[in-house]
Length: 77
Image 1 (cartoon, one colour):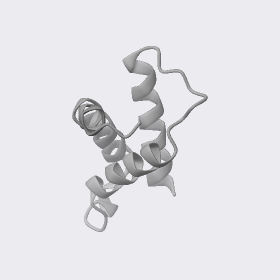
Image 2: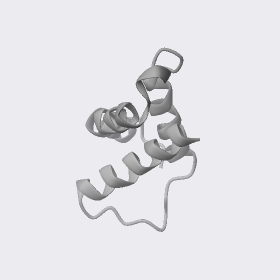
Image 3: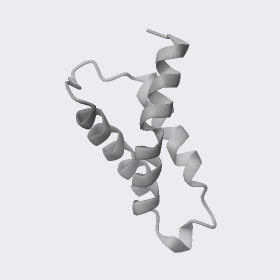
Image 4: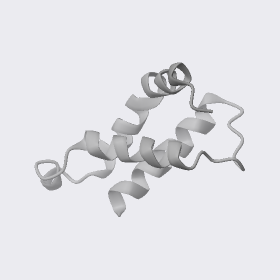
């Protein structure tokens, strides 16, 4: 609902999972052309712009799976 403290908590808790997913997916040759952090920011921008109402993240692992899938898709795009 726009709470800065909650969003900062999400960023600090789950940001590394997204970064690892991006780096696993981004080919070594492309790493010099694209910054992994840009992909991470793109995932968060999409997540916060359209917070999934239909998804239930009953466990932290569920949210990690969702965010890493988003990261893989962003890199593939």
